[in-house]
Length: 88
Image (cartoon, rainbow, N blue to C red):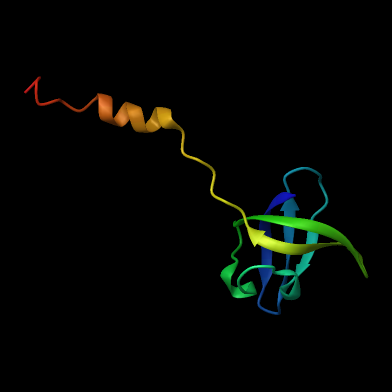
């Protein structure tokens, strides 16, 4: 499942807002699968599994999600406006 870290506390826990669904998911520092808890920041996109914790749904196997690809249209617009050697 994919989501975004919406709150991270220095005490070693935080909350993830899933892309689908309206209920935030608790995550603990021990749920981090790659890296350390300190590698994560509010606003980071993450991938995770959901398990039933003692107080409700909790994230497990939390990893940073790959960045979204940049649209090719934006890159091609920037290069088409530049003069070419033939035009100069």
